[in-house]
Amino acid sequence: MFFHDSNHCKVACKVAKFVMKLEESTMMVANTGLEEIIRNHKELTQFIFHKDDVLFKENEHPVGIYCIESGSVKICKEESPGQERILHLATAGEILGLHSVVNGHVYTNSAAAITETRVSFITASDFMELINDNNTYKLLVMKSLCSRIDSMEDHIVRISEKMSDERFADTLLVLIEKYGLDKSKELHIKLSIDELASYTCTSKSYMKKIITEFTHRGLITYSGGTIKILNLPLLRTTALLSAGAAIN
Amino acid sequence: MKPQFEHPVCDECRSRLGNVFCSLTVAQVNEMDSEKNCSIYKKGQIIFNEGNKPAGVFCVNKGKIKIYQTGEEGKEQILRLAKEGDVLGYRSLISGDVYSGTAAVMEDATVCFIPKRTFFDFLHTNSDLSTQMMQLLSHDLKEAESRLTGLAQKPVRERMAEAILMLLEFYGTDNEGAIDASISREDIANIVGTATETTIRILSDFKTEKLIELLGKKIKVNNHQGLIKTAHIYD
Image (cartoon, rainbow over all chains, first blue to last red; front, side, top):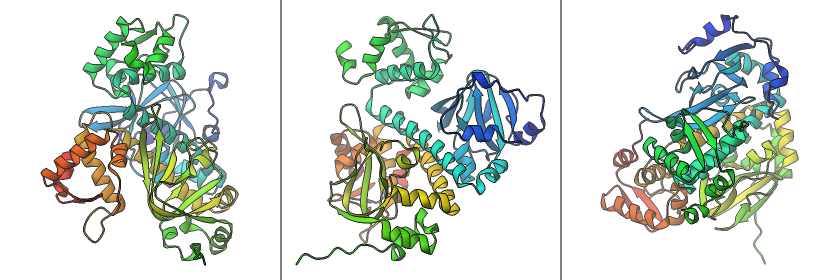
């Protein structure tokens, strides 16, 4: 793990050996255009974070903005001491830390890599200077923030409306859409039971129960963080509210 | 003769001074004044509907409004509340999406509508306004995040206490010391994300514990500290 101390930006900016060449072709570009502007900045630094490395921590003063080039990052918030809730799983093309930098507040959440992740980094002051007199850039920032709020609100509605098992089926569908399945129907991302529980908004013990139940019903298999989807149509029906009871 | 409805004048609007439009220049305020349309909405009326395309932003001059999403089974989940001075519908306009929620009036409201073209004109020409909009959205994101944490794991009782504190902070108190908004039990249930019956039961529990007092539809907080403790708020 590197750069997890509070002034990691200073260190980070000097470390040139992590600078990587961009592989344009493999990049997934979201439609906001803001990440392109960040990528074209002359003071851009690139880093690689390994699994479980922390990009930034909640309540730290924001040092800059991260743009994910490849890999995946979990955005967490401490719910009660020692207990984390995963708010969002960010993938290539997404920008992290934006709202904290814009508002000049501390980071309102933590970010940690869940797979090997390549990011472009721009310091807070460089970024603010970049957008300061440019209303078109500011509009792009607004758009980027809007899409994050939308996904947050969807999540809120989902949680308040559905039972845990429906939510887990829903979560799996979100993960399939986000990361895709390989040929053997396995999800392209490894997640621990803790992480699954945290993202589904349920307890770890209940998560284990749901996984056992889903395995019995022939929906999925789970071993060592790998989820294999066995019956996608049934998973879709389970995610629907009213269907959950009928199948049981 | 029908009494004439007097349009609020932007230049004199006190609600405007508390929101993003305070950074407009005099000329822009006058432009907004001539471009806008004002309407009076009665309790229960819809200002905009989920799934519709936005044509502009709404600026609340007076009244109380809820913004909710309708779930798969038709249950309302209130996502945000608005009062005088708040601007509505800017998010869909900026992102170019359809409205993600429905805005309905909880207490009679006067709302001004500013057309899309005028709003974007201001955004492109007024740097202060675009900075403030950016900050407003950052704040919204922060709020949405805190809303999300705790929603599923906290028991209904804690969430109810949290909701009452939120309402108190948002609407303030009237001259009787009660929260200055009459919100139906059903709406409270939709804020908390629980059933109306549960809401009524917990509110009466809180009353028995002398945490709150119920004055008709209004709620008066008697024991602020006790309520914070019940809500288990750490920060």
